[in-house]
Length: 224
Image 1 (cartoon, rainbow, N blue to C red):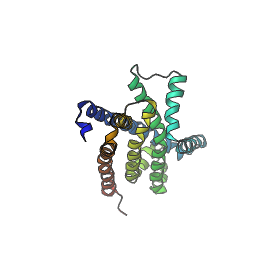
Image 2 (spheres, one colour; image 1 turned 180 degrees about the vertical axis):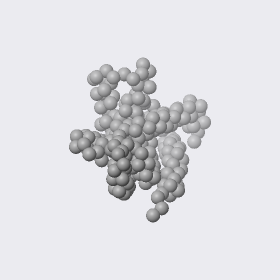
Image 3 (cartoon, one colour; image 1 turned 120 degrees about the horizontal axis):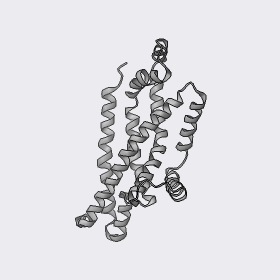
Image 4 (cartoon, rainbow, N blue to C red; image 1 turned 90 degrees about the horizontal axis):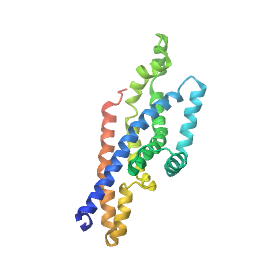
């Protein structure tokens, strides 16, 4: 544990997890918004929208996240010149957020769609009968009821997203996995303590998160 008594190493450790939290938070918001939109497309009466939603889900669920992140960096940034910040680390961060968001949105979409399927069809039919459009029915009637049944799946997606955020280190962002690699390279005699501290920090963050979402799911579950 002597590695983390060095202020430089400890600051790097904190900075790495701060990047992880930033990546997780921003990507979760964008993935949720995009995932709900895709779920609406998946249940839409318009064939083109259903096809687009299905294609998005099938493509991203079956593509390794590493390839998605590489495409964001080497395709969007290096080839197409997309720059989201003049600061190199911030640019890598936003490219990572794009990759994590579009990838995770596919899983959010399926979670939301499964929740929509739990809502009795009579609810939507009644809403349409009183003159609500498909979008209004989805927003006012269906999604609020579906939300209660997708809390637990959302928790699993969020936990996976937090762990997947370490993949952004492959494009040079100094998040926790890259910090761990550097610490091990410079402190070869402390491999196990370094690993235990990094892994333990993830566990300390994610285990309570899992219990929290489990508690919320039970608390807000529809009583049948």
